[in-house]
Image (cartoon, rainbow, N blue to C red; front, side, top):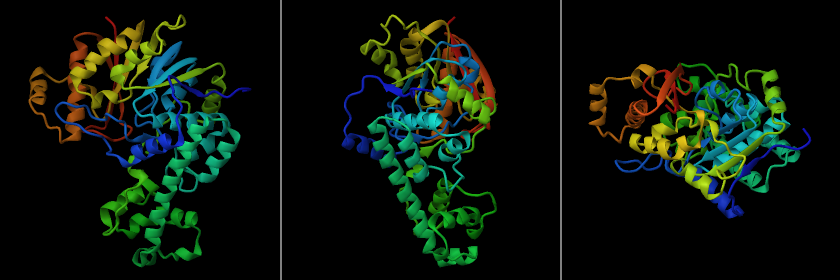
Length: 410
């Protein structure tokens, strides 16, 4: 590939270092889900960071043969998966500007790393040595040509990550009882050697039953819950998509698939707009994206699990006014209902009325369930709606199932 593929940031103003740093700090230090009450929507500011998907990459079944796709940007995997299946024109959108920096780095890594390095650096959270490795990032930075704002954001992000790792390391080193139980003397090891050892031993030292190695995310969570005096406000609380992935028939299935995605980047155009979903068409109209003679609508608009954060009437209005007008005649809007089966979506009217009568906005699981069920019921009356059920990937919700909803014009 003679020229690298980058994500074009549409309608981008000049961004100085102070704004980038503030953006990183906001994503990491603010509330996980933002405000939500009877009148506002959850996840208004997108204040968590996705490094990997939290659902199966079922977008592959819809984008095969598509010429133009719009997808939430998130970690960048939905866009890369679209590339893998032959899409050449991809618009990405996200309320969280930080995802542009994360996805830009992931795209650079795809083009400059081999399969094993890419996976260990960006996906395998249990690889204590390589996951978000400063050395691997420095090498990627030297060999790729992302814009300076992407590198600056990642510099800030990885500095915070390493400070959080150091916090755990120093805390564990100071606990003689834990080290005695683990039969280890911290001074005999480097930080990385010590932490790799403790990832395997910490759970048993804390008298927990499981034996698998812990990621930094899991170590931080365990210490926060179980060890008196540990008070970490770390970046780990805001990194999502860190759980092991199921890569069957995706661009990360094996080395050959990864290289196919890398080769498929030739001639690909990926663009990004920083917008709330409820204003997607309005903002595309504003920058004349939709009036371009080359724009003929999208074959697929992929929303991931965004709808579960939006009250049903607002989401259906968004579908009507912002998404359907952007679709090709035979296009599809696709989204994921996490932790909920297709049977649960197809509940009776009496059950739906019961759910509607209980405004329990203090229960995250209840809210997301209700939003998904109500939205599905309302959409089914206006559009052709189909579902595909998969095993739950993230383990969220009340059932170990995810349901993907396909919405088409009648």
